[in-house]
Length: 98
Image: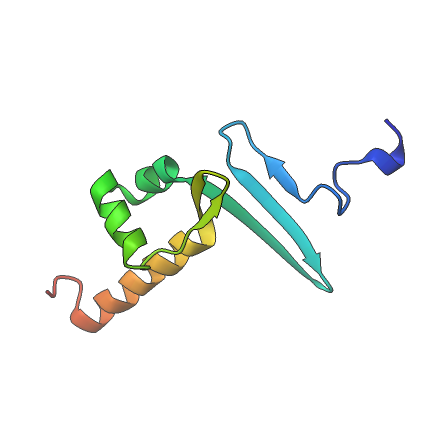
């Protein structure tokens, strides 16, 4: 494999880890975007919720997702946005508010 065949060049922006998640790296001028896509199972485990609750969040667009082929995937960024929104709502209501 020569220097021009490197998988780090712009022809290979997707990097799959051992769990099948996708690490997407794209350079945009001076800014670098790094995003990881998670399976629904991984997202549920991170949030500590079940199938029904995750599907409700997806249907209501509370959590954004993408579809690649037949797979529905959720970015780490989308989970972070959702958690930040929950934290902001919690601050407004108080930690134990309803």
